[in-house]
Image (cartoon, rainbow, N blue to C red; front, side, top):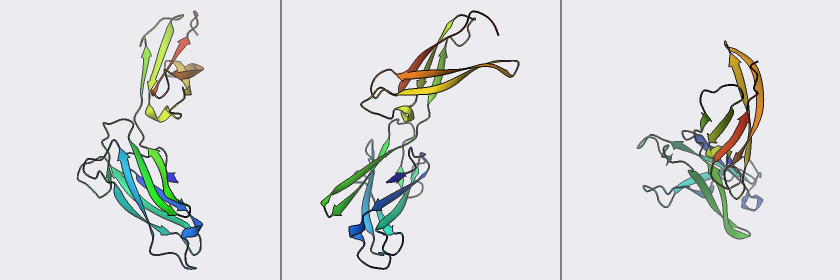
Length: 189
């Protein structure tokens, strides 16, 4: 398991592997378990990924944990360097299980900063407003057209006069762009 999800670009990724057959002693296993951390788009400085040592978190638990820092500042602390200008960045963690033999893979997304556009930005009562949100974090099902529910407030003089709930629909599978049309009433509140 990987947490948190999505991961802050300047965050700490916690890696947890629950594998009872790796628990080989009554004491916490100090030899650890190796995992490889890589991200997409590929890290040109570490194309083979980063190694992380996972240690058993207690006697006979079979639960191994480790962590790695992510950062957006080039050349800073050791860890996975994230290009914050690149959207859709993912971190993939892989470890090799011996029984049954095979690679186990988990993926976590790096959080992105979304944008909101209302068009037209100024309007009269009775006008339709096209709302567009672009945010990869809302794109949950890659093969699906996702929806997102948001609240839209009408305010005047610093007071909220009306709140509408709007469901935005992704423009296609895996686009990260969500739209809805909000129909306003023809009378002023």
